[in-house]
Figure 1: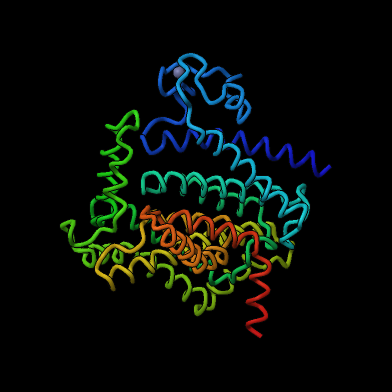
Figure 2 (figure 1 turned 135 degrees about the horizontal axis):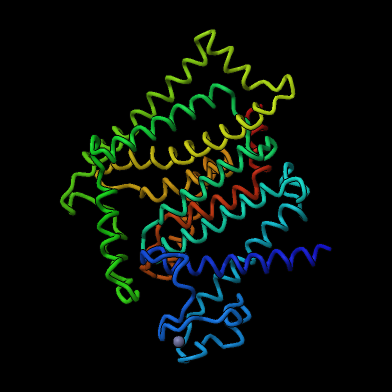
Length: 395
Ligand SMILES: [Zn+2]
């Protein structure tokens, strides 16, 4: 029984991997994900469905196009296999090794498995694109975050996502409302974007004219380095714009928290919405929604806070906005705890790699996104051990 489920999960993962290959190639190049269908990058002929079976087709055709015989990168095969293995790994950890108390049987916790699988696929795609182009595709992060929030609201499971107090829930809703207001002000031109946005636009221009991917290496050189005064901008001044952008979120978040905490009638109403004294259907879904929203904020704020402090301190851009979006997405799917742990874990992973490169005398630089992703995955799997550790630590 276990073997059958493992094979099925692997095949399913390999198919997702096949789609991720499309995403990884097309998204940074500004191409549509749906149209045209898969085609050979060399002769442009459409790939038949029977030549598009994950893993198998690549092996049968020995990595060559059926029509023109051009070599197809083994990357396609590797991404499909890795995605399949990651899905199997998640399945084995959750349903065979039972590493997490809240996730025991698939039939009752499938929404969690699906949401976590989507998160892992999103992290994989973001990491591979980040390694290649030094840019994190924000669309993937937003999609994963949306999945996290919708799943938490529709299928609330307080055993999987740590519960938060109603006041913290109010803080989350207030802060997200503040973010939306700031975004509207930004789009209306009433707020100025900081260097990240300007930088992001420049990147897109770079990539649209590199149709066939020949100039892939160009953005790597340009954007692999942190922005500093050498690029004709003052990072400390730019980061003040980001603080201004966050101001409505901070004010509304704290305002909502104070309102719920200290104003009697509001407090009573808010608490009654959250009590499941009457088997309250509404309260369960509201709590689920709030835990995801709160996780989204904490995940993003860890990195954004670090970025602001680092940039103010060192006078050059510290951590990218892409990293902020990655961790916000992790928080939306898994709650506030996992991105917080991953935030402290990621530098350790990164340092080990830097140490390895130092020994190998290799100068190849890597972006930070993949480390945040790897640390998030580790925190998801070892969640219970970490939670138990902090519980014991507190006593
Ligand atoms: Zn071809």
